[in-house]
Image (cartoon, rainbow, N blue to C red; front, side):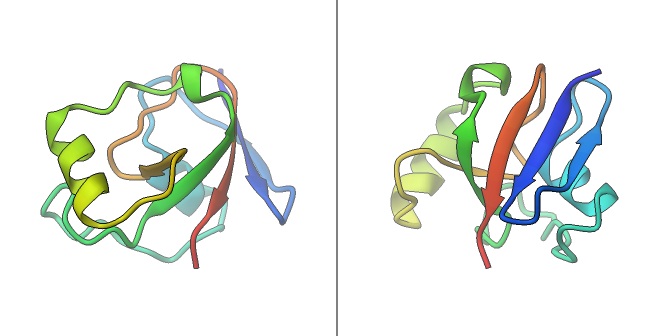
Length: 94
C-alpha cells in the first residue's frame, strides 16, 4: 500500500491505490476540509507535493486550468483530484 506523509505534523497513513490526497488527509485526521462537490472548484484542498509527485495521477485539463485560475504555486495540487499510486509527502494549505 502507498504511504502518504504529512508535513509539518509528520503523520503518515497507508492507503489503497487510487485514494485521493483529500481522502488520505481526512483519514489521517490532518484536515476537516470536505470536498465541495464541484470538482475542482474551491481550492480549499490544495496540497504542496514535497516528494513523490510521480506517484500521483497526472493533472487533467480541468485541474490544470483551475490551478492556473486560482494561482496555485508550482507543485501544488488539488487534494480531491490527485490520486495516490505510490508514496508521497505533502504539506496541506491552511
